[in-house]
Image 1: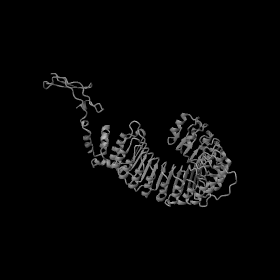
Image 2: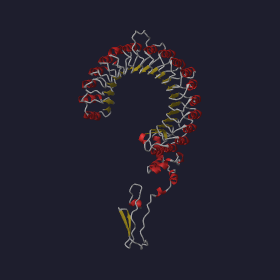
Image 3: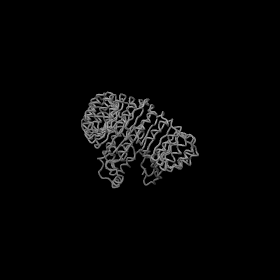
Image 4: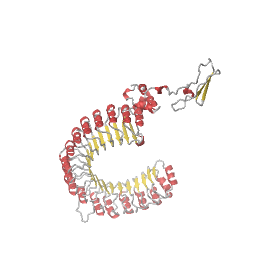
Length: 631
């Protein structure tokens, strides 16, 4: 009766003043809003004032244990989700019920819904980040997904600074989501071994585990996961200060199906743990070791046992010497290695690089970054030793010069398709005439970025060596001029498709004229960002000669309204990306031309175009609603 009389909607019921007696009847007062009069049937025997006791709805009086037993008999997912919405207490109790404890029967509607959405057997994915990463949200996910096919992938990135994710939230996931296959924990300091214990106890189908910046998780938690999840195929451990050899040894012992392992910045991981992994996991194909206190022993084990490894990344291994890399390469275990990336390793010298060329016959991709002891001699020796290399990246390898690069490109057995040189300060224009070299017919992509010594002479030599280029990236080469670039453009016989000349501030319209004349029929992407001497004349010639152009960037150039108008009247029926950022001479007069271009555009950058009014920008956004406009 009180619920019908005065329910305030806040789970409380108000019982107000006393009941008065008298011959004329009884007056029940329920607060200040409602009074009920009851006519007398018998003289009242109440001799004094009486008050109703404050009472909650009857089910709330029950202890958690009773509610737990009641909730176990909720058959359908809708009933459980609805109950979880009543209060945090009910949500907490529901999330403590294991999925297996719910009654097996499921309502037909839930089954049909799961089937229609293809969400059976753990196909659901959830990601919580930052402020949204709380225990309450994880509990809601556990209850909400358990009856909809089950949670298969969970990613927690960061945590709420006030009510962050803890072991309680992860335990709720464990109990409600036994079908979990992928678990990623990034930067969650409040989750420790207890949370992983629950995951290990309830979830036995884990295939991928990713732990990054989890300082409270130790070897114990990792051991528990490894012992209960033999089907793990991928493990990443990064910046976890309490995980060391013991955890890796447990993975080696129990997870023989492991295919990918990444270990980064874990100070207690040493040779013992790495050796156990590599020797036990025979199907490992991807290995990444970065910033670890390991020695020559570990890389030697990689060379001996890594018979299935196809992708290897070694970075910041300061204690590995030239001997370790030499032994790794000569152990004959890396016969099918196809991709090798080495960064900031002092042990990479001319001798060890030559050994890699000989010991890795299937190597197709090599990336060397900050390897300061590699010179032209080692690089050329490597190029001659390898016969399958297709992609080469060199970054901050300052002892390698033009001589090494050009000799490597002209190697008789070269199959290179892509070369990238970034911040290589040893590359400088040669003063003397260089001997004629054999062209590299296979090279399709050349990227030379932020190498300040690379100038006119070098460009001419590259043009002769690389006649079949499709992609050319010379961004950041502020020293090159029209005269230096034109010979290279003339040597590209197959037609350039993608050209990046951003921040080449000495280039003028002449280069664009040459591009349009020589490669207009094949050009798809052109980046002239920061080329301030490019004018409307360039847009006019591009408009009439480049029908395939779909990505154009002329930011911070001297383009005006006339250039935009010329472009809109051209043959660019496929133009999708246009950047005019920093073109201060484009005004409101360009609105019609921009709207015409907008018929095909999906991206338009008008940032820092100060002559365009906010009203014009708003009108463009309204009319070009399919286009993503930056302003």
